[in-house]
Length: 424
Image (cartoon, rainbow, N blue to C red; front, side, top):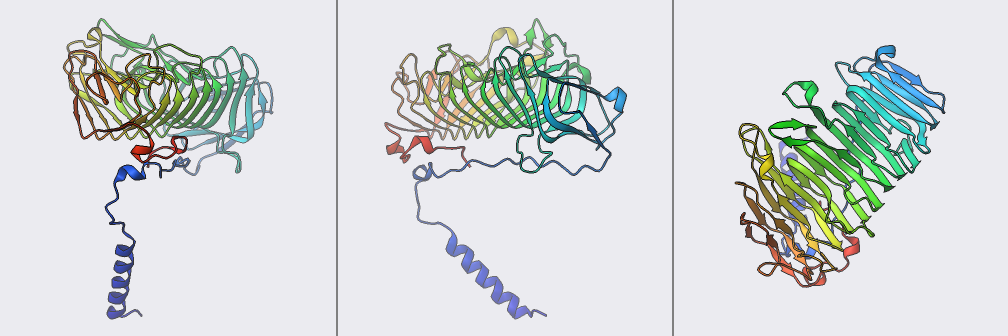
C-alpha cells in the first residue's frame, strides 16, 4: 500500500516536471504561426446495437425504401461493394438513428448517376463500414448531373466519409427552395451534418436555395454543419451556397486551387443568415473566402462569428465580406445581425489589384455592428486608402482594434506560406 509520504513525494515530482515543461520565454505568438497542424478526422460512429441488413448486388440501381424494410432505431443497413448506377433512399424516419454503411467500396459512377434522398430523418450515411477504406462511398465521373439530390426537407441527417471526383454539376443539392417556413418541423431542414468529405474537380459542393421575400421565408435550414471538407481543383465559383441558414457551423475545411479561370466577384462560401465560420484554410484561390450576408431569423439579433481562419494567396479580393439587404429584414420576421471578425491570418490577397484587398469588406448591416480585432495581415498590394485591415463600403463603421499588418509573410514570422495549415 502506498503511504501518504510517498504520495506527497510523487505529487511534488509531477509538479516539478510539469512546470519545467511549460514555455515561459515570452515568445511573440506571431512568430509561431507556421507551427500549426491540421486536425485529423474526428467523427466516431457509435456502435450499432440494432439489426443488420445487407442490401445490393454490386451493380445497377439500388432502392432502399423504409416502407418496405421498416428499419428501427439503431439498425444498420450495409450496402455491398461494387459500382452502382444509382442509390435511391426514401421513407426512413425511425425514432432514433438508422445508419447506412458501405460493405467494401461502394461507387456510383457514370453520367447521370446519383444518390437520391426522399422523406428521411434520423439517418446517417457513413463510408466507414470497411476497415482500411476511409471514404467508403465514392461518386465519380458524372460530367453533367448532380451527385446527391435531397428532395424536400430533412432532419438529423449526417453524410460522412464520402468522396466525389469529376462531377460537372452540384455535388449535394437540396431541392427545397419552394418549402415555406411556418414553424412546423416539416417546413425546414434541421441538424444537417456534412463531415469528412473529399471533392476533386467538382462543381459547387452544396447548393441550398431559399430566401426572405415579402415576409415569406423559404428553404430554411437550421443547425447546418460542414466540417473536414477537402475541396480542390475546381472552377465552380462558390463551393457552398446557402441562402437561408439559422445557426450554421462551418469549420476545419480546406479549400485549395479553386477558380483559376473564374473572374466573377464570388464568395467561395456564400452564406445568408447567422452562425460561425472558423478554423478553415482557404488558399490559392479567387473570391472572398466567406461572403457573409447576414440577417437574424426572428426578432432577436444574433451573431456571425468569423474567426481562426487562414486565407492566403488570392488572385482577387478581400478575405471576407459582411453585408445585409434591406429587403430581407422584415419587422416581426427577421432582424439585423452583429458580426465579429477576429484571430484570422490573411495574406497575399488580391494580387491582381482588381479591387481593394484587406481582411474584411464591410457593407451596410442595417443596425448591426462589425467588430474586427486580433487579425494578422501581410502583403495586401491594394489596401483601402484608410486601412490595411478593413474596407468600409457603406454607413456601417467597423470597430477595428489590436490588428497587425506586415509588408511580407517573412516579417510576420511565416517563412513559407505553402506550409500553412488549419490553425489549432
